[in-house]
Length: 138
Image (tube, rainbow, N blue to C red; front, side, top):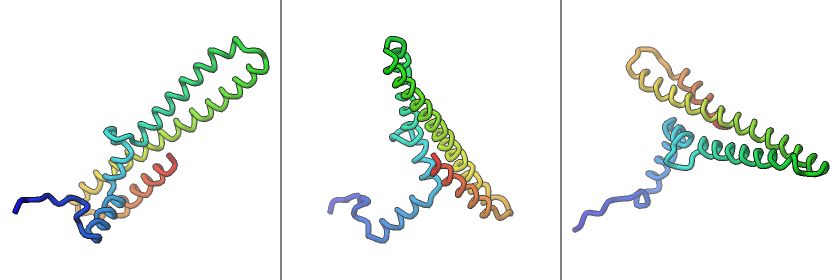
């Protein structure tokens, strides 16, 4: 009989569910979702969006001098909207970075907690909840 590797689909229903719950409750999986640059992650998408906003603002600013007064007012309104969007994306990038930092601190605290005689479970819980709240705000 030939050896066949078992894939995720061949696992039982309970094994799949336990793996899913592990991935949803594991801080490392959250960090990977925030700052994993091999996939199209949250921080990279926000940075790309900010770049597109800046490029559009440059185009509008270049055309604002050559337009008549009605189109100039329209362009200035668009610049205000783009400025607001850029500010919101900057806040989202900041919260995403804070979330990744808190998750890394949570992982480091988990590892150091095994070597220290101090109970760090409450600190780990607070760090993890703060990281998820920061990711939610992002």
